[in-house]
Amino acid sequence: MNANVKFTPAEQHRLLDAEVSGQFPDARGRFGPYGGRYVPETLIPALERLEAGMREHLPREDFQRELSEQLDSWVGRPTALSHAPRLSAAWGADIWFKREDLAHTGAHKINNALGQALLAQRLGAKRIVAETGAGQHGVASAAACARLGLPCTVYMGAIDMERQAPNVGRMRLMGAEVVPVTGGDQTLRAAIDEALRDWVSDPDGTFYLLGSAVGPHPYPYLVRELQAIIGREARAQYLKRQGRLPDAVFACVGGGSNAIGMFHAFVPDREVAIIGIEAGGRGSGLGQNAASLSYGWPGVLQGCYSLLLQDENGQIYETDSISAGLDYPGVGPEHALLLAAGRVQYESATDDEALAALQECARLEGILPALETAHALHGAKRWAARNPGKQALLCMSGRGDKDMPTLQRTLLAPLPAPPPAPTPGAAS
Ligand SMILES: *Cc1c(COP(=O)(O)O)cnc(C)c1O
Image (cartoon, rainbow, N blue to C red; front, side, top):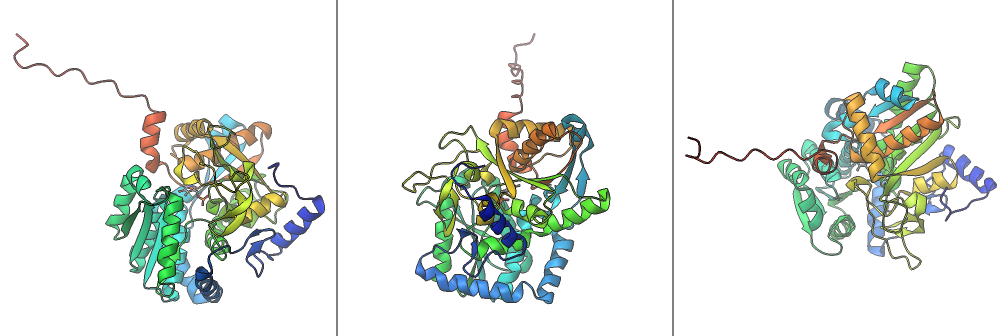
């Protein structure tokens, strides 16, 4: 457990009971001590309108029916539950995957992008703005907007645009405008600031489609509601296949959307261990990882009070991870709550551990996971060594095709140099 946050057993019980009985987020948008809405005054009316619209439309039968139809016919839900027999034999525990890598665009992010785009349409928005770091959320947003006929503008740091050129191309092909952000750190944090600025300038006509379970209320709640289908499906599929629940459930944690989506249905099942795996990067030193729940302190980042990698003056540390999707200094407030309540254990996996787990999964199961997902795989492997014969269910959050440039560099031996071309006339 993170040594920077301590709650008494009585407080932990109270927080967990409140979470299980659905009292969070409360009227102020808080998950116990975390969450809230720490934004400039100009943003408050837009967030209040979004919250009212979300509460009106999300539970409606016609909204849910349209969402279900699109999820079934276009995203490809329900995604499969796969047993991993050879990995199970190698690791010593029974390993199962919930296959979000099979969802359209290759990861869980489409569940959220599609749901928010449908909500935007109901709220009468004329255009969508989104931000993206590695480009995966930008691609999911561009796809959902193309599907629904909504114009889409994606803000992306200039440095990220260069690093993730294929995703920039994918977004453009699907009709999105990708705007380079040259201010600030020229990466995800600057892109979020720019998307917020755009939204504030026209909060009625524009909808801000946020990519993870972070940010000001109501986003952490909205994203969780749209991703919770992962755990609901997985829990029912597992019960049907195995006639019982797994002993432990795993997911990787960046901002925390695939993890909260997977975990939420299992939180009330107190006999099921829940384990989230963060990016341990190159090690536990300052600036060497992106493990906010393991090493962070409470503080405010981008509108939300949660655990952050920061110094005593609130300056955010640089983060480091081989996986762009986990490389964020904060984490969603509901995870900070689940840590405080003692319900979820958060651990980390280093770059090297993730790469090794990715390679084992690819060779033994014929599944090339995303580098983000590979962190969760290492967590499951470590758990299996301590829990032989038990059953683990893991959220396979995405596929690894997007990571090929990194994998070429790190795991694949360089190809032998081609033989020198014969010089014309040299042979006699
Ligand atoms: C973006 C991404 C993540 C991390 O985001 P969360 O919001 O923490 O889920 C994890 N896995 C994959 C495949 C991703 O694309």
